[in-house]
Length: 113
Image 1 (cartoon, rainbow, N blue to C red):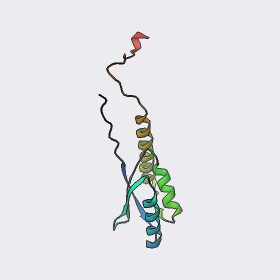
Image 2: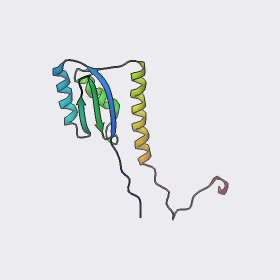
Image 3: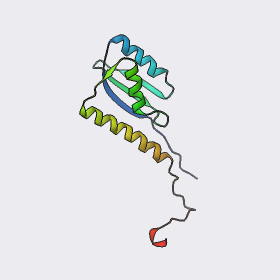
Image 4: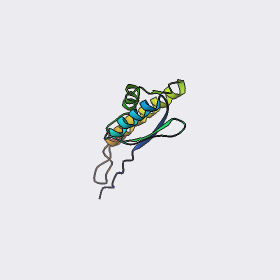
């Protein structure tokens, strides 16, 4: 019997600035997206996202935020964090493509080649 694989959505956050009208429009756009499960902004302008990494990347979410007229923190360490988020999304998608080792398959070892 194959073990079941549980795929958890990614939880990400970024700090945003903008008018309350543009932030509300951005939240409506993010919540309308079928691959974003949750989008909330707390009082310190911290956007908290829960999204399905299989279908949408964090860079695409940043593009949605930018097109809504909302700015996000874009300093050196923030860009580093966003790149880490994107790399983690890519790595998680690649890990889903790996076929798991099973008992009825023969393991190929280097010394046998």
